[in-house]
Image (cartoon, rainbow, N blue to C red; front, side, top):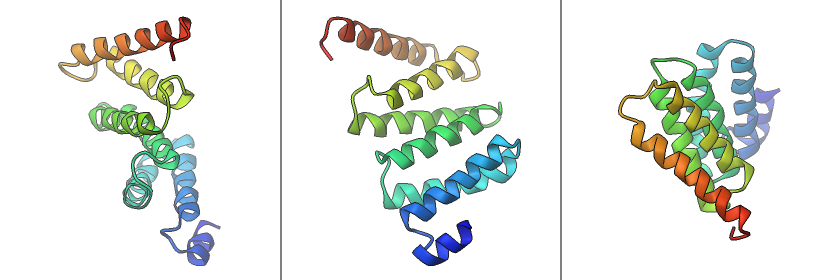
Length: 143
């Protein structure tokens, strides 16, 4: 079905790219990360070039690919960078209190708290402070 959609619309059409990403999501969710990884790379390259890093589809791909990469000690830093890039893109389009940036920060915090990234203490503290500051601003009706 994805091949037919890509043929009908062109492989670079946003719907065809998203369908390909869904295939990678499926492969990852069925414990086939090695099959999903090259597809995520391909999708991310196309989305970044066509849609940009602040597009919701690109952010979703960055998050899902980050999830896959942070499950492996050898690629955890690359996965963390996916989360960072996704957060940077998300904050260009939406407020921190939107669920997407909050999810990315939560994912980043989880990776940092596991201690798999060397010299990350300052980044961990900065993210925790950002989260606290936003919660306080929300409590006071400032955001």
